[in-house]
Length: 508
Ligand code: NG6
Ligand code: CA
Image (cartoon, rainbow, N blue to C red; front, side, top):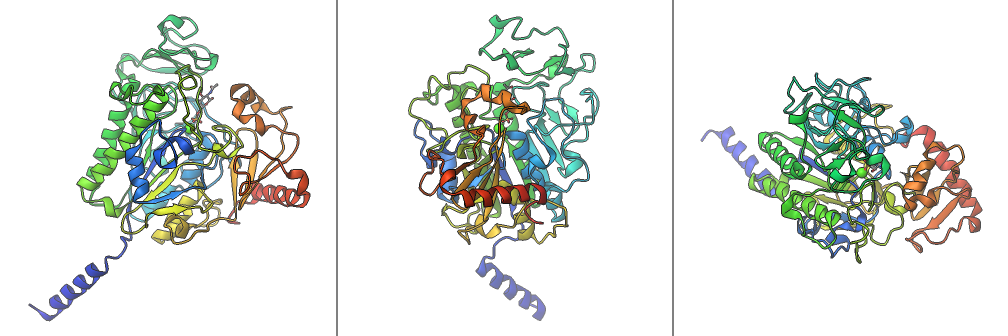
């Protein structure tokens, strides 16, 4: 053997012996929709079994104070993907025909990861708008994920309860017959399909007025849709179709570093799990949808293991906003809840300013690199961008991901502390956390166009108070005692800090 070859071999052996952390792990975000803190076994659920998620937690780091940026989907997803709070762009839950919210040219988590050499994909729910102006679903639909850093996309364009009820792969609706073009309207009814208002007898679930437009697969949706009969989805097939696409992407990229944003439809409404999950719990469709979602987690982790990628893959399991029971359809979620506590001990839920709105089940799993355990670090999903950039040595420019802080040490379990402050956004107000202090900014329904939400979910009642609210979560984690009057200086300080951060961004 030549001398330098021998030297090379020795170097190789030495480096193998040290088992260095892989410097470019695959990254998978398992982003569940509307899953509450207490909806998984490891956080206390017993009425539904989540063995696959519990296994991730047993081998990974389970966070107890990790937050989505908002208590609804669109702003949370926007912040996760841009490192910037949704309220900076006045984001709200968008209709299914909204234009692309993340404009081409805007730096994003996937475009940052592409700089580090990653192949990137988004599979599942999008709900961040597509196209420009009036979308023609029969042509190429763009801009969308492909124009902002994703190499591949396979989407539910908006939400399960909104039209169009079809799959979009890259720029194209799957299975569309050109002789049966799609039209979508969130105003005047289009097409001859009956709506829920016209034919309530055809419905599998009774729906509120908002969810009473075009009936597809026996469920009335938000918005009307004509045409596209051959392309319509069957809700019961989401689980296998999206999981299959994830498997294909992982297999096809097993030799490169890849980033997969796996964005679940579950456990959002309408909840129509595949028949093989029906009856897995006594809680009806909501519980069964959790069991279905857990199965997907098991399929994806099994795929990684089969390909020998488990040790080289960082998985973040989390949710976009807190839990909700009846979100427009009568699907027995309230009636059959029993003792299950979707938000654990926390108050509120989806839409709400209270903790359950944004405190998310959150697990990081990266065997060999992240030690198993529990972390109480205060973290926000908006930080993923800067933290992964730091880990991968990608520089972030001024004005890029302005709210994202590098908390990689906390994410990987090397530090128990992360942020001093986070902002939590409800549908009607903003809150500031400073350690265990929580300040909820006062707001009034008068002149607030979002006042309609109060009628929708009483969990957000606390959002509208003329008085500032202050809670000490160390002593009062369930936000029972508003102690703002006892701490006027702290209220003043936190209200001022929130006002500053609203304008400046966290990194400036
Ligand atoms: C609301 C819908 C709700 C759900 C939510 C979006 C009504 C009355 N409610 O507008 O059912 O679709 O939007 O959920 O229309 S999220 O998880 O995507 O934010
Ligand atoms: Ca959601």
